[in-house]
Length: 225
Image (cartoon, rainbow, N blue to C red; front, side, top):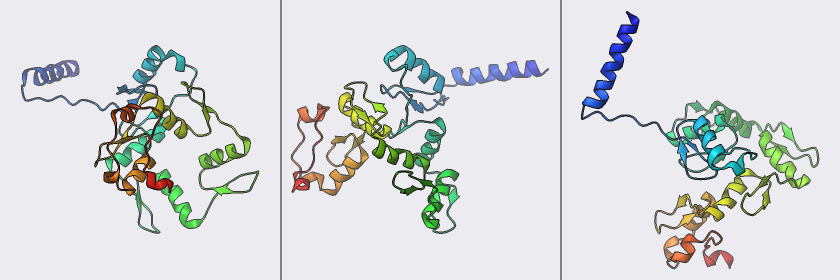
């Protein structure tokens, strides 16, 4: 009985999809973006398969998960999922001290430490303390000189993964942050913010050569005064 009902439902579903001219199938979002190229995938397993077959040179390299909406990168899937909530506007965790709403319980926990001054992670070398362990790890590399993130194009090494991601955009030509006024693209959000603060309309028109250059990032000359 159950099997017949299931088959009938399946048949009805197929009829709705293929015979109803007004039916628009829902396409799942490609949330998982390859860290080696712009290709996006619905499932993590598809991303891993693509990476192994299309980019075999990255087989021994740590996977970097990239947000399909803003190109920000993450080392863990849960971190990417929490980040995606920032794009959806979902903020269900409210700080009872200042009233600020945050997108995850973890973000709320770290935010509350700003009010309490609690910094449980201390550097053994200089004693400086941090709210997050990841911030302590980055700080300790200042003392050790460790640079574990190496560019696959030129071999230059960096202490932070985020810095490597920005650096590699100079090689690929990717400019994910675009000015809504003049259309210029930038490799990092901070560069776009700086550009907007210095009145981008006063800058001379960007040339085609600069637009496609992987090495040159234009800066307002007034910043150099």
